[in-house]
Length: 347
Image (tube, rainbow, N blue to C red):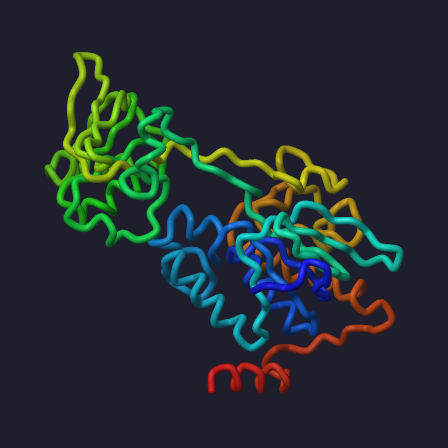
């Protein structure tokens, strides 16, 4: 979606983050009568769920026994459909400033400007980048043979894959890939892992059953004649080893950074935006936070917690969008206008 840079996009609430919490917030905004716009610096919807574990099962969404992150995002997009919130992907909000009329002016790195009554930050852990493999030859192979995430499991079907890392993400993806890849080898610098005990146990059982291999060592170099990966050299205690590979999946973790948010004049502690738990408003009136980026005592970093936080934040945001209007609560079961919108969107 494009808008002339010199024409601010007017909205009741600007939602920063197109992950599950941001998408649900757009739906909730529509339910209570607020217009919304969604901005995300990632080029696709879904946030960290889609970037890190799109096919990993999620079990703690109310009334949904199990679904993948990808399925959850698809369902949230369908739920948002009655209100058609505009999505501005690949835009990073750089600055926000309060105007004389009390509203907010927010500008992105690509020149898009928003005029909003309130801002809801649902940006997960903020901007994040994967810890990259510190080898010069890896750069030219990124996206083709060296990967830092798994957009689609099918892309590795029938291939020889090396997964590097020792955390939950590395073990989970190694276990998942063994069902589609020709061969999977997990490489970690030591025989101890910083993953859930169940994941470690499953991995060791898979190795014993010869469903995958485990190599203890570190990646020393990549052999890619003609620009195509053929093998990976592993530095081990008893000497180097050469492993055949079509793809290398590097999962060393992420480096999280709040980015420009840290310069917006709101209180931040431990990388989280301090909020009032009665309405999830930050220390700056009119700016709210929900999801992983919101910080408060006994914080639970769960998607369902983010849904609750966004819902209460938007009800306070309503007072900024319509200061002279009292919002009347209506249960969704009795909301005729909502029923009409939902029916029309699925017609």
